[in-house]
Image (cartoon, rainbow, N blue to C red):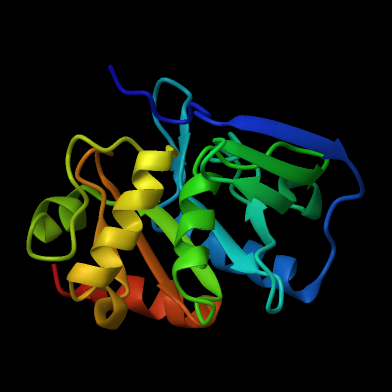
Length: 200
């Protein structure tokens, strides 16, 4: 059974204003382009997929799309939230806004933790790229589920033992169709994704 969209960590949502910033506007514009390509969206059973985030300056906080927003062609500030704290060991994410953070937030946090120069992360679904990239690109173990502390550990392993720092793209073997790109900026993360798609 596909467990897409299931939040596997304890989410603490602190009510607050919707994040309104240049970073959120950039996220919204990029997300709209990815939605138009079908890389973010919703499956026939109503479960949404795909999310993206940007780091807030030099901190470990980040803005990320809210949970179950995949069906919306366009997002507003209310569809984003700010992750203000997290604990991979305790499997907990603390966010602030009007919506709970994406079910992939723990994975985003783990990638940001690996290297402070990583400033943006994109998670999309592409069956063609997922199938072609399996084992040819840095690939997580098939037994590791998304959104878990184990995935956080797997991200670090890949970063230290594969070409991930150079390629900036990875395939999530245990997360059907799922892949992640990242970069110093959101534009860079999107460029990595689009170049990879063109290579199919």
